[in-house]
Figure 1 (cartoon, rainbow, N blue to C red):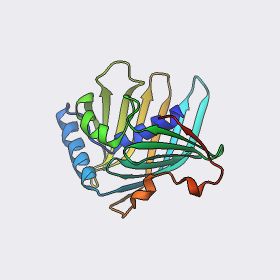
Figure 2: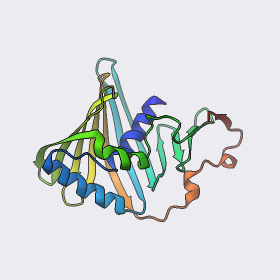
Figure 3: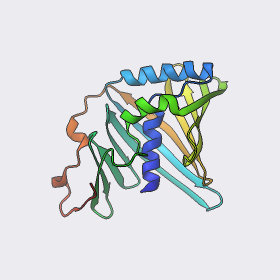
Figure 4: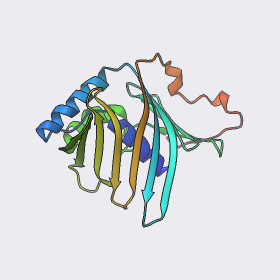
Length: 209
């Protein structure tokens, strides 16, 4: 569950607003942020690797994310995280169980809305290099005690879209996300961001609100 929430955090983070610091990095990130905010909806398909050499972990998954405003649905590793902006459902497919939480129950939780309002001041940015059509930027959290030390972003210079982002956490794990497909401005019904119990006969409900 913790890994999945880190994943949700990372994906939402990568397509939201960014820090103001290094002037070149700031210019690039502001362009990406402005373009991303203008989309009515986003649908991405991605591949994900979590590696920790010390713990001998090398997990690989594929997944997808739909996002519209403060609503999102993340599907990965036989789990769905669904949020309508107020309620968050985590559906564990193998267990046929859904956990329900208030979207704002955890002060350290990540939602697109919180990211758009908080991350403009929470990170230091640094331009690293430009390779062909790819611009590389690193972000460092200002607050102490975060579970990660930096985030490396690879950005398509022409499209102003994230191609890849890598999160380095304090426990030695490296989370790598590659965006394989990026679709914008699809018509997505609000019902897609609500867990429908009727579609899952016999589902066990754990309401943790």
